[in-house]
Length: 226
Figure 1 (cartoon, rainbow, N blue to C red):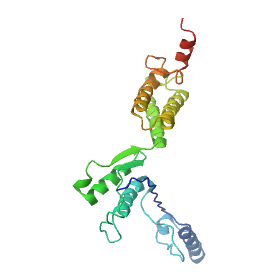
Figure 2: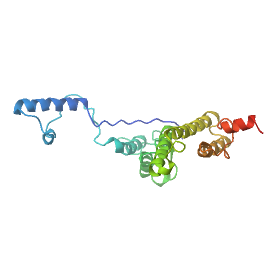
Figure 3: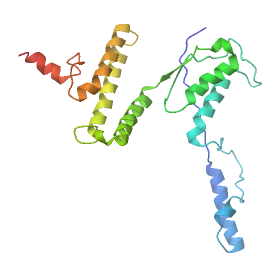
Figure 4: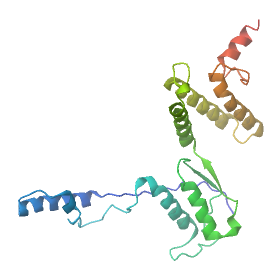
């Protein structure tokens, strides 16, 4: 068994420039033949057939395509073209699935592995959100808090600038851990404690702040202890 980092990418296209071109030609032909424009109801009856490769490879809407594609990806990694297990030398089992955390796609991927392998795969794989989507979700969550509870609105509360500052602090702390302490248990613990300090820090409570790198209040206090 080997531990590998594999980047998987599936691309779904619900449209094709050749299909669109063929449809536009048939719309023009209809007008020339019948002397009137095609109605919305009639467009569905016009052909989009064309020569050459069709670039449309899916009829699934983008919002739900990720879940279906994750299941397809799982099968491509574990089984052959006939649907049989690809064998220990070729099959790839994903122990850690790194992807966004605002869809069910990673859980669909893990569930598909379990369906194909069986109980031997139970509780072996886990989802690890990627940093970019995690930052987006943090940002969206703060805006939702403000939207749902108007008492958080205001210049000195969850303003746009304050939300941006909180998300920026989260990113900076995680980036620092990634560069300087990734894999070290003590560094991870410090990172988690610093993340817990961000919101109180932004609200003027520095009781959880630990390091002058992250807190100007502590820096000033250290320079002027009295």
